[in-house]
Length: 126
Ligand code: HEC
Image (cartoon, rainbow, N blue to C red; front, side, top):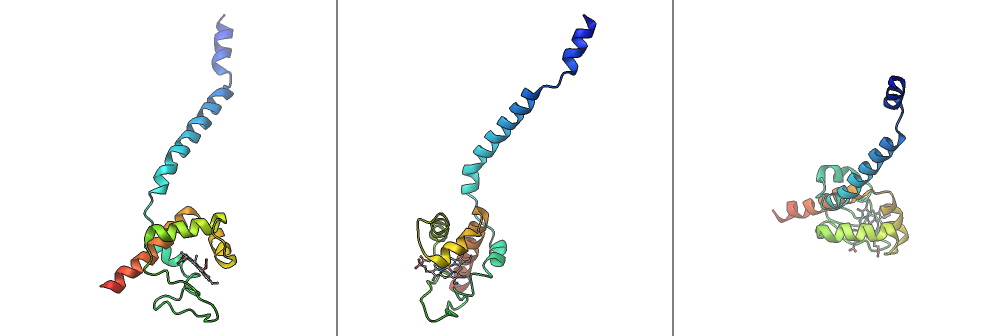
């Protein structure tokens, strides 16, 4: 009797681990909508934007490759930049260069870089 109780107590419970994983998964799922509201950090964005400015020549938005037009994104609306980059990343907006650029960006990168470009506008206005 005593032996059996002790045995039950010591037995490893894989279902506990499973519950832990399910709870963890739910927390991740719940944090999704919060992440979508993330405002972006312009200082992080400035680092990411380093590669972008070669084409979206900023400040002054002069294209360093004048053979084709590159839209001005300093001065664009935050939501528009985020939406454009996500569309390039998932392929719903097609442009070989920008598809390749957006492919390297995480959601957080996109928000950071958008915050950076928006912050440039504010500087120019002042
Ligand atoms: C090699 C050149 C090049 C680089 C580097 C580049 N872009 Fe672009 N980008 C373009 C071109 C060309 C377009 C216009 C594409 C089109 O017509 O859809 C564009 C379009 C965009 C647009 C949409 C603008 C609009 O008015 O609709 C956004 C936003 C953008 N780029 C952001 C970025 C960001 C952020 C980076 C850096 C991670 C970046 N780009 C790097 C060339 C570049």
